Structures are given as C-alpha cells and as structure tokens.
Image (tube, rainbow, N blue to C red; front, side, top):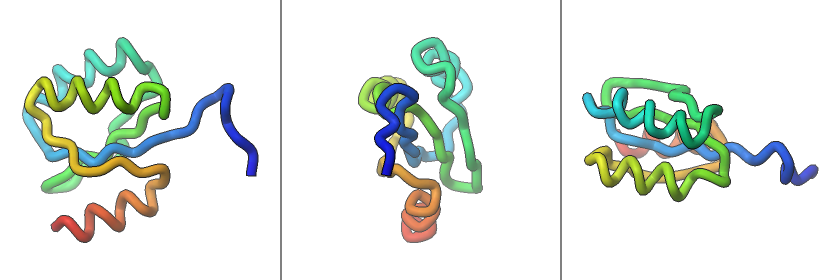
Length: 86
C-alpha cells in the first residue's frame, strides 16, 4: 500500500442534515478547496475532506451547530455507519 503523504488521504465525515450547512461549507472551502459533499440523504450528509484538515473542519462544524457523528477513511464504511444510525 502506498502512503499518499504528498496528495493526502481522504476522510469522510458523517454530519446531520442542517440548514446551516451552506454557510459553513463556504468557510470550509476557504480552508480545504477539495472538501465536497458526497452524499445527501433524508437524515445525513457525507462530507469528504483531506486528512490534514479533518480536526479543524469538525471544530468549525460543531461551533456552527452542525452535529458530527463519525469520521472514517472509506465511503463503504461511512455508508455502513449511516445505515446503522438510521
């Protein structure tokens, strides 16, 4: 397995669906331009970001009232966690 040290690993953050996410995403995009919402369902949002910015992004989300559930390294695991939380 190759360590992606220079390009960075991806992290997937499971969030609650919220009306505040649009304003918060603008702030997150300033810090990590590669951050992107991958999946939206009726209850959750799956946000992809670089592993360097994960802790800072979670802090920003929580400060703005968006609840985060878990962070994982793969979409497959994130979907499994989201299915278990429903």
